[in-house]
Image 1 (cartoon, rainbow, N blue to C red):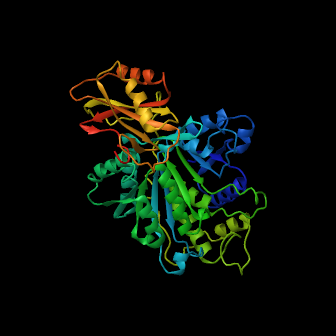
Image 2: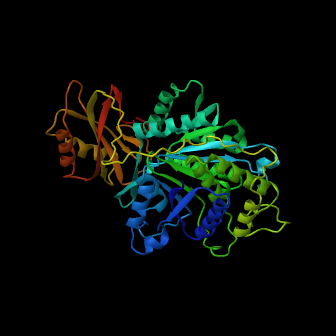
Image 3: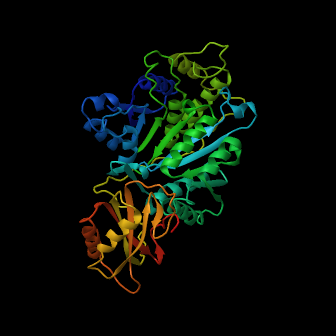
Length: 487
C-alpha cells in the first residue's frame, strides 16, 4: 500500500532537482504517491499573501507530509518567508539536520582526516522568528523574542529521544544565557530539567559563540546539539560549511501532526533551467523522509547508492575534482540509480532509526494550547514604561516623578537608554538615543493592581510619548525581569 504525500517543486532549480529525486525513488520502487501542491514565489506574485493556495494548505493538512524544493520569498513586498511560515503554521517544532563527511566531497576536515558526524536540533517555532517588530521612534526599532517553557520542552525532549535512537552518548545545549538571562536562561533551565530524565546521556551546555569557535576547530567533540531558533539557524548553516555546503545538508522539520522535508539551499535562479543543479541536499532530505515514513530499507539502499556514487568521484559542477567532467542534474540522478545495490567502502548505512516512525495523528477540532500546568505564585512589582524623549536623563526623571503625584505606592527607581542605566547614576560617556525605559517599582509592603500601573503610563503620556509598557513580575519569588547594565 502506497503512502500519499504532498510535493511542492519549489522555485528556481527546485523543479529540476525534485524531478531527479523522484526519479531515483521510482527506480527503487519506493511506495509513495505524490499530490503536487502550488506554493512559492509565483503564488505570492498571483496575490496569495501566504505563498500557497487554499487547496495546497488543505492538501498538506490532510496528508501530513510535505516534501518541498527551495522556495523564494519576494523581497520588498512586506510578505513573510514561505519557508518560515510553513514551519510555524503547522507547528513543526523540531528542525533536525544531520551533517556528515561524504567521501568525494572535499573539505578542510576531510583533507585533515577528521570525520564529521553530528546532528543539530533547532527549535523551529519561537524566538525572533515570530517577526514581532515595532518602530518605537523613527530612530529605534525593537523586536520581541519569545521563548516559552512548553515550546522549549517540546524540542529539547525531541533532541534527547533522537540521541537515544541514534545511539549517541552526548547532547549539548547551545545558548547565550550569560547575556539573555530570561529567554536563553529559560531554554537552558528546561534543558537541565529534562536532562534528569535521561541519565544515560551526557548532557552539557555551551555558550553559542564558544560553540561556533569549537565547531570550526574541533567539530569531532560534538555528537548532537540543541539550540534556540535563531542561534540554531546560524549554527546549522555553519555546520553545513564543515561538510561541503548547503548542497549536502538535509533538513527535516518534525511536528506532531505535519512534518516538512526540504532543501534549505537557495533557488539559484542564475542556473535555473540549465539542468546542472546538484540534487544531493534534496535527496538526503528525501531519504530522511523515507525513514520517518517507515521505509528504512528504501532509505538505506538509496543512501548507500548515493554515498557510493560520490565515493567514485561522480559530481555536479559545484563540487568535486575539476579535472574530471561534471554531470548534469539528470545524469547525476541516473548515476545514483545505476549504483543501486552497491555500498561505499566503509560498509554504508543500515535501516537505522534516525527518526521515530510517523504515527497517524488523531483529527484535531480545536487549536492545542500548550501549558506546563505549573502553579506558581505571582506578584506584581512595578512597570517599565518606554518613552520617546530627547531630553537629558535628569530632566526626564523630573517628568517621571510628576506622574507619581497622585500615586504614593510607587518609587521611580531607574531610567535606562538602550539597556544601560543613565539615572540615578551613569556615565557622561553613555551616548543616548531618543527612546528611554523608565522603571517604577512599588514601595515595600504595598500591593498594586494593573489599573494603577496603567494610570502611571497615562499620566506620563501627558508630557512624553509613551511607546510601550511592560509589567514587572515575580514568579515563585524570583524576579521575572532583568536589571539594566550598571543598575
